[in-house]
Image 1 (cartoon, one colour):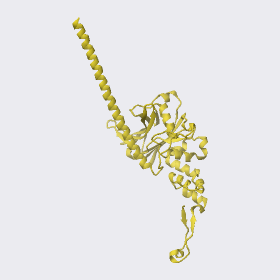
Image 2 (cartoon, one colour):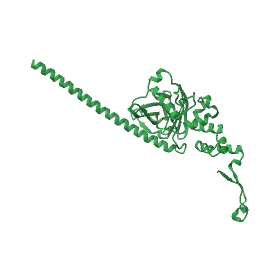
Image 3 (cartoon, one colour):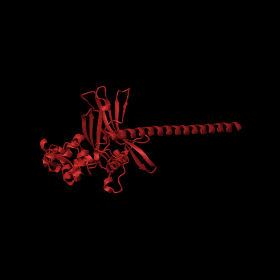
Amino acid sequence: MFMVAAAADRDNSPACGGEAAEETALEDLPGDVLALVLRRLDGASLAALGCASSAFRSLAADPLAWRDLCLAAFPSSAAAPFSSCRSQSQHRALFADAFPFPSSSPSPAPAAPAAAMAIPRRLVSAVDLWHGGKLIMSRVVETDATSSWFLGSPFRIDALQQEGFTAPNPISPAELSLTWVLLDPATGRAVNASSRKPVAVDRSWLTGETVARFTLVFVTSGGEGDSMCAVEAAVACDDRFGHVREVSLSAEDGDGGGVSGRDAVELVAAAMAAPRCRGGGVGVGAAVEEAKRRYGEFVKGKSARKEWKARREGLVDLCCSGVGAAAFLGFILMLTLR
C-alpha cells in the first residue's frame, strides 16, 4: 500500500514520548492532485499502478496522461489516424502495442480471435528520428497494402527519400535513435518495427555515407521449418555535413533476399497480434542488446548460407565441366575410331 506520512511536529513523535504520527492513504489525496502526480510517471509505472487496486485503475486510465506519454515517445502519432473502435483508449492502446518490443516469434496465442490476424489493408507509419535526445525528423506515411504492385514487389516503405534534410549539428550515427510504429487504422493495432538504437553502423568510404541500421529479427514458421526474417529501418546520412539522405523500412529473409510486400504484411499482422516482450520500459536497454545479439546471429547465418551456396554452385559447375569434358573426349574418340 502506498502511504504518505502526514505533517507532524517532531516533538509529538513516539520517540519523544508524544502521540503516534498520523498516516494518510494515497487514495485520500484529492483526485486532481493524484492526477498531476500520475502524469509524471512513465508508461510502465502508470500501467503497474493501475493494477494495484480498483481505485487506481480509473486514475491510471486518464486519457490525457496516456496522450502525453504517446506524444513524448512517438511525436508523429499526433497526426496518425486512429481506429474508431479504440477511440476511448486509443493512446493507452497505442502505447501498450508500440512501446514494448514485439516478440521475436510473432505467433499469436491459440486463444486469439481470428480478427486479431486480419491482414492490414492500409499501413500507417509514424516515424520519429532523434539525435542526441533531440527530435530532428517526424513524419507520417500512409501505404496502400492492397495494390498488386506493393504485394508483388520487395517490401519497402520510404519515410524520407531524395529530398533529405540537413541537421543543425553534425550527426554521429551512434547517437541516432529511431522509432518506426506501424499502425493498422482499421483495427487500431500497432507494432514497433525498429530497434530504437542502431544494431549496426556501416560506412562507405567511397561515397562518405553512413547507414545506421535499426533491425528486428523474427523467427517465422514455414513448411520447411523455422526461418529468420529481418525487418530493418535504415537511416542513410553523410555525418560529415549532417545531411540525412534517406530513411526507409525494408525486410530481408535469411538468405539475404528481399521479402515480398504480401509476406511482409502477413509478418506485420502476426507481430501486431503476438505478445510483447516482458519488461516494458525497464527492459528497453536489455531489449536493445538482445536485438543487437539476434542481428549478429542473423548476419552470421546469412554469411554461412551464402558460403554454402557458393561451394555448392562451385561443385555443380565442376561436375558440369567434367561431364562436358568427358562428352567432348568421347566425341573425339568416336571420330578417331571411325
